[in-house]
Structures are given as C-alpha cells and as structure tokens.
Length: 328
Image (cartoon, rainbow, N blue to C red; front, top):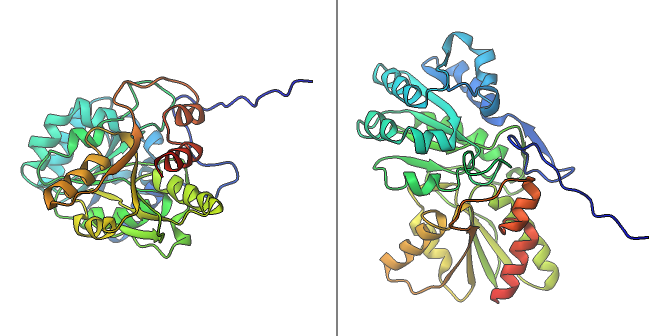
C-alpha cells in the first residue's frame, strides 16, 4: 500500500506561520496598543478597511472614540494620520504592507517623514506571510522604505517583540514602520531572556562555527535550525536584528569578527533588505567578510499554501539547515 502524502493547506489571505502545537498569543499588536492607550490618551488608531485583519480591531473595541476608519483609501489614511500628529496625537495607522509602501509612498515620505512626525505605520502581511500572490505579498517593502530619511523600520520575530516594541515606537519622536505579524503569533523570545530595544540587535544564542544574523519571523526559524544543527555537531549562534533601520552596525561588526560562517535570514527579497544592509555595513567599514543570504528571490512569487511556499523559496527550517551544511 502506497503512503499518501499529507496535503498542506492554508487560508489564502490570512495564514499563520506558527508550527503545529507551538505556543502563540492572539493579536499581540492590538492588545499592546489598547493597553498602552490606557496610559496615553493621545494615542489614536486608524485603518483602511482592514481593522480585523491587522488586529487593530482590539484597540477599536477598547477605545471606539479614538479609532478612525478611513476606508480603502491608503493615501488618505496616511494623510489623516499626519494631520493628527501635527496637533499632538500619536497615530498608529494600519493597512497591508503592500498598500502602505507601494500605493501611499509619497504620502508617507512628504506628509510624515519629511516633517519628522510621530506617525507609526503598521503593515500587515509582510514578506511571504500570505498565500495570495504578488498583489498582497510585500516582499520588497523594506527595500522601498530603507532610503526614506528619518524612518525607523522594525521587523519583529514574535509576540514578545511586538508587545515590547509598541510602547517604544509610540515614544520614538519620528515616523516608524512596523512589519506586523498578526492573528495567532508564535511566542518564542520569552525563553531567551530577551528585551526589545529600538535600534539594538540581541544575541539569543552563542556558537563557534556559524553566525545566523536574522530578522522578523526568520529569527524563530534560525533558532530552530540552530538547535537541530547542534545534533550534527555544529555550534550555531543567532543574532536577532529587530530594527533594520537604524541598523545596529556596531554590534554586527563585532559579531562577524573571526572565522565563523555568516548567514543572514530574512522574510524579504535578498535585494535591499537585511542581507544588503549587513553587507554594506561590512563594506563601508573595510571588513572583508563573505555573507551568505537566505531570503526570497528577486522575482514575483507564486500563490499557494504557505508551508509549501516557504519550502519552495527557502524559508523553512529544513531549507536553512541544508543551506548551512552546503556552505560549510
């Protein structure tokens, strides 16, 4: 009798990257924002007809008089957020990453970043976190935004990162962009004595043979791969970089010293994201070090089941382990 292969399925629009049986936290962004707003009455929330799908509905339900629904008009969303910031409010404006970056770039740049306003843009479905195709896969959002002066870019790993990042983003004087993980978000970093610090990288695991420099959900995968590679006798370190801009260049340069294999991991195209940020930091400092990038290819991606897509494009734990072994 031939064994049948288990079919991998996922919701096309809102898919979870959590492993089966993994600890998760529901809507950590919405809960953290609603809690922070209890102490800070100037915080307001906005959405472009996607409150439920960016978890800001939790804030809406807790503070209905401080929530504004702008409809499917992302340029108006960011323009309204800019106006609110001008009068002393602290807006968190949520929509999908593709709409915030591709569709409303000029409004983010000239209405928010150029005057240095405290507007926090929250982008859902970053990278490959939906089974929909290129219309919703924000595989190049970091590349689009890295060149914007004064904009802070945060790519959290898990619910712990998000919960701790929200108050720091609200307190930051200028504009920020958060790559949102929503729904049932894995809870991982509480096991590593971790504390989010804006602009700072954090060593989660030490190792002599390999250094994995990761961001976003790929830090969870890096930790899993490191643990499994230890069974092969490989000692693998993991450096989590939750803030892409400003990059913690000093810490990265310190960590890459030595003869360890250096691998970057990101849920983003290899063009213009973490890999190129690290590589340019090394080049500008005069550090001669090879960097192996693990990330999405420079192409429009397919639609389908999320686990299948992560395998196909090299974001799965098995793919990471195979790439590390091949490079040693």
